[in-house]
Length: 469
Image: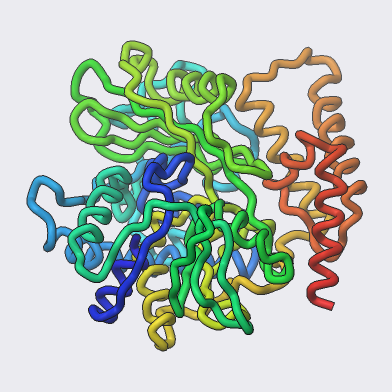
């Protein structure tokens, strides 16, 4: 929707159709907490690589685009429908995760220093809205005035309204099953009922479902890093009285996931998120295990008084995660076909920047940034084998801590890491891959179904080598 609006602003004469199921079942943005900022998402691993720093640079650029983007949207809406940001984010750290949380907290501080971004150290025991159990008290906290949040549902509603009002923009409530490619050029898209919507330019921005469309074109698909689903569970609560929480409260990113966070939604509502489990296929419903884990974290680490709150809704969403965890942005070898996906946890936050960049490119311009993550590429290698194994071990040990695993003191504190180390080494040995090292985040897919997924990834990487021979 952001790209459709950006195309209209770039050239009001263009006719643009936004195609997809209106219900948006399992979509990432519809279930998002929509924390607006990039520094709170920084990790130690992000800062270690050129690709990671390129992603951070896009986040910093996106932050500068939001004020004018919202101003333009609100100018066309009634006062009651306008969208605004809730400013301010508090990042706090406690001892409920592993060393990976300490590393990521330090990385956030490093990124803030390097950019000269404003921040303030807080007394972690005097933060409005934070009322954890005694054994979950935070040890440190930072206030980031330049970050905050937005109501994702309200933003989606506003964008929908603007498109429905436009004479040259339209929605098609349907599912695309394949591309219409003839002679190396895009001619349109084929819907599930086999009808065709003709167009000389097509932007695939279907999140995790982009992969289903690409799979109908194997020769093209194997030249594009494969997409997987980062399935997440979140919930919305209504408190008995207006919450004292004024800003986003969040931890640094943790084991295989974004950090635990609480986002004020105005009045008495509070968004709590979010889990992150990598799947080969989208997760359409949340599980009791994720529900229990998220509620336990919220009650123990955020606010014990939330036990008296009322549940408004559970939400399940799927973040599009490429096999190298990097975005897929830009043109393909098919003339007129563009990709805009693989943004993992950052899609909604990056949307004004990516939309305006894509609109300019589709209309023949140079775009707003260098296309570091073009869709047709070999998977980017972010880890050596040794680095991936060490990082995966940190994630698994942190996951054990977050789930409250308690071990006998004598000997077990050494045996537990060795058990995970042997398991991880076995997985990486079976994958047998040195050229393309699977990032630790995706290792959960292999561990959950070893017999099926080890051959799957071995075959996938063989196809990638063949495609780029």
